[in-house]
Every structure is written in structure tokens, then in C-alpha cells.
Amino acid sequence: MARLKYACDMDKSVLLNNFEARGWIPVSQDDDWNFYWANVQSVRNIFSIDSGYRLTDDQIINHFPNHVELTRKDLMVKNIKRYRKDLDKEGNPLAEKDEFGRYIHLDFIPQTFMLPADYNLFVEEFRKNPNTTWIMKPCGKARGIGIFLVNKLSQLKKWSRDSKTSNFTPPTSKDTYVISKYIDNPLLIGGKKFDLRLYVLVTSFRPLKCYMFRLGFARFCTVKYNASVNELDNMFVHLTNVSIQKQGDEYNAVHGGKWTIQNLRLFLESTRGKDVTDKLFDEINWQTVHSLKAVSNVISNDRHCFECYGYDYIVDDNLKPWLIEVNASPSLTSTTSSDRIMKYKLMNDLINIVIQPGQMPDVRWNRIPSKDSLGNFDVLFDEELAQQDQVLQDSKKAGPGVRGFKDLRGRPSPATWK
Image (cartoon, rainbow, N blue to C red; front, side, top):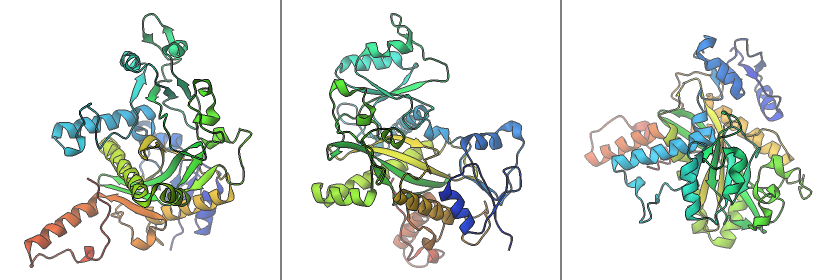
């Protein structure tokens, strides 16, 4: 059998060791590769109209052409807001609101405005609650770069060409920002703020097929949380990004300021109880599925593509999760040995799902992996299986004599949040 050829833009051991362990052959991106782990720029070039590149049935690549609809902070917010409005128009009970006009079920992103476009709307909201802290982030940057906290309108003046006219002008046309209400009641452990980094694999958007990796982690700040106005500039207190925290004096290189999700669960179960802990993680799964549904109609669902997203959640002290952002290229750098083991497993399990074990990639495959191939991934949602299960349930209600669903019996029903 022909050996699979891979191209890779990154010199990361967790990737290359996986490819070598499978006996894959390294080739350049200009050769005939079967599997390409590409950076976002390479993907943009491959799918650009000018490239004239045509992928064959035995080629797959690790990004969807316009993944930015989910991974750019402003586009994610715009798409989730649109999704809520669409459900509202349909009269879908998911879009139900409380007496204050807040979504009861779909309130999972902090209140957010785009700057400069929503500057006047933001000012209006700010004046209603002048003691609120907001967090400002450049839309197109990652790893905590360019983020700062504001609690006074005057702090935005340096972004404004002329503060008197309220014509807010960013430094360059490319540098748009989102400004979101800061979650100022985060759940603290040992007095420190943390967020969750979870890995979500999507193999198709239409129908939606997505998987959650069990071995995510919590990233802790190195300095105890303090909501005081004097600490607004101290990013060691507020931002959990490892790229920022590892520059601090308190950073511990052995554990990297991380807990596994399993350890976090055990801690929450022992301090807050099993029921509320289960509810928290169910809610995270549910929010993840709906964030993907929010973009499923706008993503170019190319059969050659899959994507491993890095989802970042913050949990507040009511144990309510908030989706903060989704990363297109979650870091594959290993800061600790347990980090390296976990990320190696992530890649190994991911490959077993996107390519049938022992086979060459094939875009005609229905992308329903066997249960044995899932490894540390759990099915989050499979629209195809969910529809088949629904038909099966309906056929059972209809009584005997309905054939054709033998293969579904005995298969665990996929998670089907609606």
C-alpha cells in the first residue's frame, strides 16, 4: 500500500513525532501531499481564487477556508448575535428572553461592542453603568497581545482622533477592536483567576460533526486576583495566557500554572458538589455546539478540511461558563512534560478520526469514525446520526415492519443538544 505523504508548516515535536510514528513520508507543500498541517496563511493561499489550486480526493488540510468567521473575535460575536436573532424570528424557544431582555439560554458571550463601528452604542451602555470594567482586545491578534482594561471613557481617548466628536478612529483600518464587559466575578481557586482551554475537532459543518477532547486544562494566573482599580494594568492578575504568565516572577515551569480538566472537576465536585459540576460541563458542551451552529451556514464547508479549535471559557463564581474566544491555531508548543504527552495524544486521536485507520485520506468518506477511533475525544454533536436516531425513534413508534436501521441499534446515541 502507498505510504501517506505529509506536509507541515510547523516544527513542532507533537506533530512530527506523530507523523513519523505512522511511517508517513515528509514532502514539501509544493509536492503531492495527502495530509497538510498548514498555518493559516498557507491555507489562505491554497484556497485563494488566484492560486488555481485544486485539491484531489486524497488530500485533507487542517483549516476551513474562512475559519475566521469563528476565530476572529469580532466575527464570532457578530455570528452568534445573528444566530440568536434568527432563532428569535423563527419563534424558537431557545431564543427566549427574561423580563430584562436578556437571553435565558443563549446568554453565553459577555456583552460586546465592535470599535470603531459601535462606539456610540458602547458609550450609551457605559453611561448606564459607569462603574463597570471593560476589556478591550484587538480582533486579529492572539496570545494576549494588545489587550487592556478600561473603566473610564477617557481611557479610550488615545484611540480616538478627536474625543469631542465621538468619531472613534482606531490606529489603522485593520486594527479593529472588540470591547466586552469584563467578567469581574470570576471563580477563584486559591485566590487566583483561571480560564479553560478546551480542544474541539470539527470534521464537517454541514452536516455538523464535532468532538470534544477530554484532556483540556485550566490555566491559572500567577498573581492572586484583585478587582481593585489600581490593579487594572497588572496583566498577571487578569490574563491567563501562558505567553504572558511565564514572564512573571511567580511562574512555575514544572506544572506551567495548569491543572487538567479531571483535577478541576474533582476539586469542584468536592467543594461545590457533583450536580453543579456536571451542569457546568454540560453547559460548556451545549455552548460549544451552539457557537458552531452559529457559523455552520457561513463557513465554506470544504470536504478537504477539518479543524481543531482551541476554545477558551471563563467560569464565574455562580459556576456559569462564558465563551471568551475561539482560536484557529491553538498552541502546540509544550511548556511541560505533561503538556507534551497531552498534545501528542490530541494529535494522535485527531488523526485517527479524520483519516480511517490504515487508509489514505478520502473526502468521499462519510466521516463517521468507529467508536474505537475516538480515543480521548467524545462526540459532541453529529447532525447526521442525530437525524438517523430521530427517524429510528419515529420508526419504533410506528410499530413493526419498518426496516433499515440495524446498524444504528446498539450504537450509543450522540449528544444531540437542540
